[in-house]
Image (cartoon, rainbow, N blue to C red):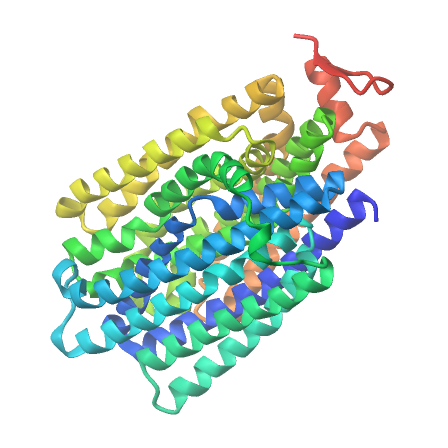
Amino acid sequence: MSLKIQAAKNISATWLSLAVHAVVGFFLSPFILHRLGDDGFSLWVLVFALTGYYGLLDLGVRASIVRYVAKFAATEDKEQLTRFVSTGLAFYVMVGLVVLLLTVVGFFYLPVFFHISSNLLGTTRLLFLLGGAGVALSFPLSVFAAVLEGLQKFSWAQLGQIGVTLVRGALIVIALNRGGGLLAVGVITVAMNLFSYLVLTWMAFRAFPLRFALRYFDRQAFRKMLGYGSFAFLILIAERLRFQSDTAVIGAFLSSAAITFFSIGARLVEYSTYAVRSMAQIFTPMSSQFAATGDFAQLRRTLIAGNRACALIVVPLTVILLILGKSIITVWVGARYLSSYSVLAILIVPRAIYLAQSTSTRILLGMGRHQTLAFVLLLEGGINVILSILLVRWFGIVGVAIGTAVPLTCTGVFFLPRHICRQLQIPLAAFLGQTYLLPLGLCIPMAGTLALLRDGFPAHSYGGLTLEVACGGAVYCAAFCLALSAVRPVGVSTWKALSQLSGYKENTQSGESSWAL
């Protein structure tokens, strides 16, 4: 199968899974909120945010498995592939036992760190115990998900996830309609998450004849995994600090109910990231293969095409949320939560700037050149937490949002584009122009259309919102088609246009590339 066909399959399956997941989550969240109430919903968000921190015990090993599976699959070294996967599985079994121990300890200390009402304390503790046990079991099973990702079998994994997402949503609706509460939602969520990992495990064995035994545990392989994974681990810590510390800060300094008002705006921002993050993940194993074979010309092409695709998705979504955000919140969860729009407005632009460069971070990981990125993201995460703690005392949830937005903007604007251009020897101006001018330009007529519709015909229902978004989307698509028709007659591809603008010369016979600066 050609690289283009494989990438198309992976992206198509990923987007289909994303669409199902986003639709289910979008309609399920307000249903859960109104059934559980502000306190119950907030505790649900808090508990699963806390158990999410167990992911730090991964130590970057999962990223190592993805990279080395892709590398050894490209070089057809089945012996080394088996050793790395077996070593990763043994490590994760030990991590699962540590998670169980930490969960038991945390069971007793939850009320010490967070403001939890006495009538919900028992339920919260049980939910925390359940969530921790689920994470402990999922650790060893996640090896097989990493194997599928390394083999670039994204289409298999995503199609399996579609069924799990639909069943989970249906079970939660049934349980809440029949009087179930916070624990019922927790049981269903954890059970379906484990079931999804079992499905991925079955798929991994179908995709590759895996063998496991203690004799395959390799200390040298483990050292290599930790060597690569140590910086991936720093990135993992940074991701928790950057995007998952806000809930803990609010729970510790304000109240559990305040988490709901913050999470509504933050969740809409998160929904807008699904398409980009899901698509960008295919570039890590792809770039690992290119790096393993020394094909830097393909890496440059992937960077330009991948980031442009990310921007073409995330920029219009950002425009929609900024212009129609208040209408979306009102229709989605009710006018009572309109104050959440401030959180949405503060977070969405910095997140969009970073997400438009998702391919850059994935390529750095695939090439194994993510050391500087790890330190910068960790610094950003630390500043995020400090600013959020300082600002929450004066500005509440808005202060927490500002504490996240400021360092994230600095990383996305001042560090990442310059760093990736240095790594791949691409002129910064040419990279920015060829990657982002088109997506930004296409959104200007769309923004005008949405603003006119919002002011002239305010939406008060899902039907009205759908019509306004459809009109804006139609304008965006029309502008995109017009841009394509203007470029195609010239007969110049995106990469060739970049070459002409920036002086890039590629020797197709030797495979060498250079920039005439």
